[in-house]
Image 1 (cartoon, rainbow, N blue to C red):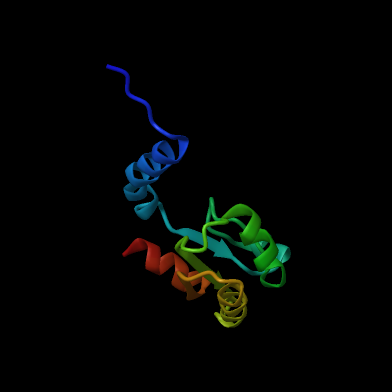
Image 2: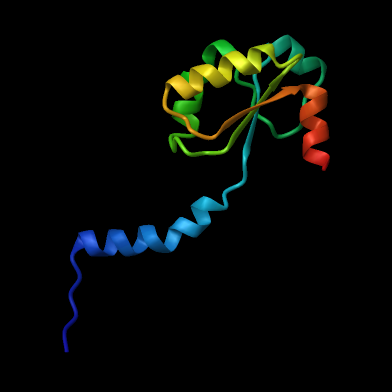
Length: 109
């Protein structure tokens, strides 16, 4: 017996089987401060993307608009601006986590 699948059917089956993996992807944490601030203190492994470059960089690095993105800066102000910019760009799961200290605390809970 010969079984044939269309390319579309295979893609649909793959997307359904990978959906749980994508849904449970690790959240992204982004430092939106300046490079000088980041050099003074940062959380290892978190990318530095200054708030005024956030949309271009996030669109390139994380094209899935449903990616869980957590932003932080010195006080939360720039993270708020970055959050608004990403939401205007269509990102749906963005949080302002406040300051660097608050981001550290949130991750230790």
